[in-house]
Every structure is written in C-alpha cells, then in structure tokens.
Length: 139
Image (cartoon, rainbow, N blue to C red; front, side, top):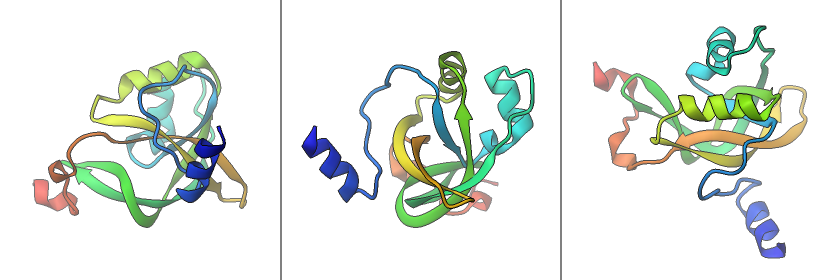
C-alpha cells in the first residue's frame, strides 16, 4: 500500500489503473464530446442537464484520433470540465459509451475554485502512432 501511495505521488497524483474497477460514484474529467452538458445528459441518461465545473489536469496532452480529441500522457496542462457522476449506473453508461480505444485512469484534477480532487478520465489505450497532433490532418 505504501509503495502504491509513493508511486501515485511521484506521478503527480496520477496512477495507471490496469483493468476496470468496480463502478461507483466519483469525479470524472472530460475534454471532448462528453464536455458538452446536453450530450453528457443523453449518454448518461440523466433527467436534467448536469452542471459541469471547469477544471484542468497536469502532465497530459491532447492528440487527435480523426476529429476526436484524445487525452494522452504528456507534459502539458489540459483544460476541460469535471463532473461528479452520481451513481454506479451512470458510471456504467459512461464506460459503455467509450470504446476499447480508451481506458479509465485515475488522476488528480484542479477545479476552477482551486480545489484538488482525485477522479478518473478516459485516456487513449492504443498505439500512439494512430494519433495526430492536428485534427486537420484527417480531412
């Protein structure tokens, strides 16, 4: 347990999570299509439009898989939104929406009010060579 904590702290609060964990409520960081509240409400099958909070993550970067933004390991700050998924069922719907091209990873987010929370994000799970630096390259 102590080694896991030290590894987490050395990685800036982020940790690689091999395999899916049990679905449970928690913070999620979105940086692409799910950062649109109406789209998120549709995918998560919510009755109301969710309230998203601006946030950022460190030591990541954005690349492109066709027109889609993809979160990868890097050395940049990536801005997006954070949202607290309220139930196990909602988390399972989010997971179902993502393809096997993405894996869920634990990371630390900084919310716009300065609060730091640990949550999860869907990050690229395939060969980095499939991605582009520029979304225009795919047109």
